[in-house]
Image (cartoon, helix red, strand yellow):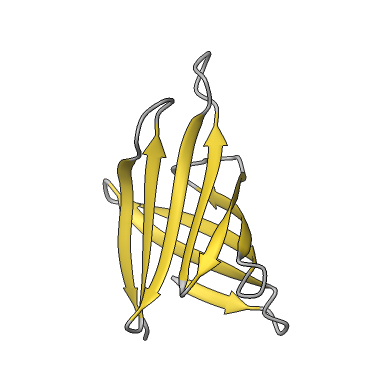
Length: 117
């Protein structure tokens, strides 16, 4: 994972890679907003999860924690949800993602903890 924050601290980019069944996958997030407004907007693309689409998320930032929700389509079904939670604690960054079927609670999809190098 690599994180860059712009000079004005208005947005950050997060790029990461991971493997699934021995194949490298990559992802990118652009997070705008922050400490003053407590609101965030995220654009997310991932070579495996979102493939060729950029998903849009809105959420909040507070005390080192970003939580945001987005939606995507699955056939004729009502929209599904996707939650991203980023939490900075004790020098580590945890990235968790939940898939949310219509009318249900979130189902764990991703959890990764990154340590500062």
